[in-house]
Image (cartoon, rainbow, N blue to C red; front, side, top):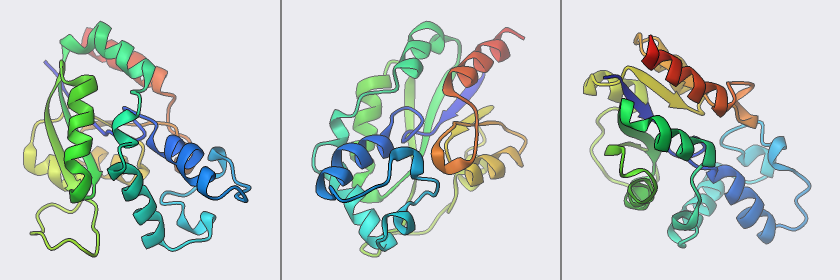
Length: 195
């Protein structure tokens, strides 16, 4: 049985879209950018703010209760309902330590029937003083040694994990210059299991 390692934000959900459209734009009505204009991640330069200010805004969104109310990507949820039982699943996300429990709770609430383990590589924050283990998802998966397939929106992570010999898919988002539509990725997963 294949093991799929899933990213959470912008793969299982639409965090950046919801944060930008419902949180950032409501507090910055003069912002002329659209979600499709967020061609960099993190998008702080495009927003005209510092990276720390962007991270603070995203963390405040996460901790405010808004993250807990995010809906799962409907196509992904349907795929899990129809095909999830054919695979083992883990989550591997990059999230600040302060928000990891919120992310884990969200994952278990929406995908807990299939996803049995939650792993994270802490996104550094200046307020954190924690031991440094693996600093990337590729390093983490190399240490863990379990994944056959990896799905993420970060091209750097996908490239690094692919170099380990793990089949990797990049979900299409404005900031990653392409990737695959999530429906095509999900269809590919079904085809992998049938071969």
